[in-house]
Each structure stands twice: as structure tokens, then as C-alpha cells.
Length: 149
Picture 1 (cartoon, rainbow, N blue to C red):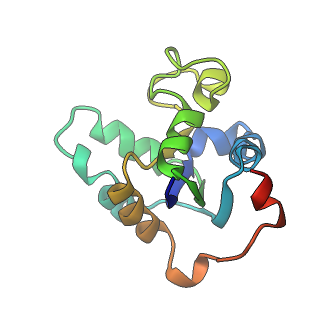
Picture 2 (cartoon, rainbow, N blue to C red; picture 1 turned 45 degrees about the vertical axis):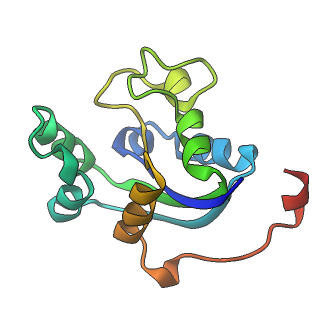
């Protein structure tokens, strides 16, 4: 196993529906460590850099309008194979196809408003964490229960 750090965004629908605590709990209960967390309003510049790979896709304008519509909560989480673990906890992108027990399967309603974003690879995770967190906003610390997870 490899210790990894990855980005999770609790998107505007998570904030608006009052689900941030429940979503964050899923990651903590799994044994992932929160190393950074903040609420922010994503502006068009940050949204454009974050979703740069989608610029040519037909849903890009809707994606930008959605992510900038309301505050989000950004998380940097750490753990063994964190990228894959986070993606499994989130469920597939389309909530209507996401399994029960996943964040999207339990709370999601449609493809655009799918509650969370998680980095899709270690390279993406490193780039995305740096987009949303300055180095001094990330915290290294030991969790006493770590040996039990």
C-alpha cells in the first residue's frame, strides 16, 4: 500500500443540502485523515484551471456555472491508496448508477449535481491539492488510532 494525498470537493449541492458533515464523516469513518479543509467560493479562474481537461466538452459551461454557483468545501485527505479509496466511497459519476452505500448512490440525484469531486489519479491529486491548498494550509500529524485502521 502507498500513503497518498488526494483532493475531495464537496460541491455546491452538498453545501446547499446541508450534507457536508455526512460526506466528511464517510471519509473519516473509513480511516482517511483530513490534512486540509476549507470553505471557499470557486471563481471562474480557479474553475477553469481545475476543469481544464473538459474545456472542449459540451458540458463545460454547465460545469463552470455549477461549481461557481455557491460555496464549496475543499478537503485534502490522506491514507493508504487514498485516490482509489476516495473514488470508491464516492461511487460512479452518475448517481443514478452509483451503488448503495456510496456518497453519490445514497445522496445523489443527477449527473450534474453529483455532490463530490475526487481526483482520478495520483498525478491529478497532486495538481489539484496544489490548486486548492497552499502548503501552509496542509497539516501533518499523527492519529493515535492509525494502527487500528
